[in-house]
Amino acid sequence: MLTLHALSRGILFGLTLSLMIGPAFFSLIQTSITRGFRSGTHLAMGISLSDIMMVFIAWFGISALFETAKAQSILSVIGGAVLIGFGIYTALLRHKTSNEAKLEANSYPEVTKYRFKYMAKGFVFNIANPGIWMYWLIPISVATSTYTHKLEQIIFLSSILLTCLASDILKCAISHTLKRFMTDRVLTIINRIVGIILILFGIYLVMMLFVSTPEIIKNLPKK
Image 1 (tube, helix red, strand yellow):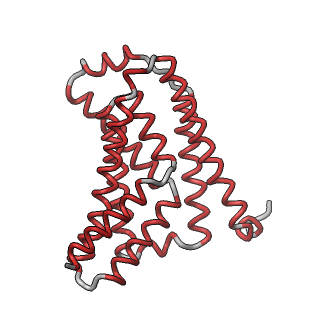
Image 2 (cartoon, rainbow, N blue to C red):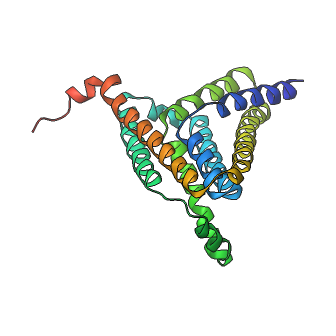
Image 3 (tube, rainbow, N blue to C red):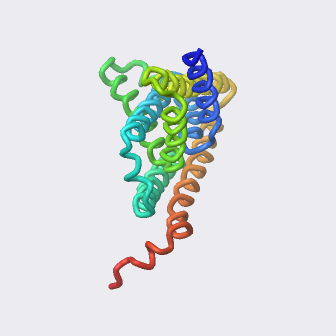
């Protein structure tokens, strides 16, 4: 009974996380529409790998290192810079259908390298969001306080991770079906919009440093 409880509660947590709208969400939709379902799923796998890493970090208590104001400031600056960089790149990206046709004709190693790029992108996008780090502290706390057996805790956390991955793949499938109705011009506009959104997310993260941790700014060494 407790095992079923852990499974159902984990699925509920996973669905909640999958509904969160952040940089990774917009990148997932944009990649699936402009680059195809497989590229989107590789991005989703990268996001899932970063989630797994965060769970292990929180599980072993290392997450306490990221709870200080200074650590949050560092994460905000690095995450903001990464998102702004990817946002500029995406906004300047022009979609051309012919490029995808050439890619499909490439050798397997080249295609594998291309897909790995999206896994790395999904991984970086997810860990660049400090909010995700904070979110994973909640299910870890629930797992350790609600379930006494390690197996139940593992089932609870695993069901969250699998639900998030399944939800992301579903988003990829739905987004990819829209591609047939879009021209290169429309897909290029989507790149512009998503790029601007990522830049705004990045600016927001950097600005949060000045809003939430003013004492750190005051203590910076003067020239």
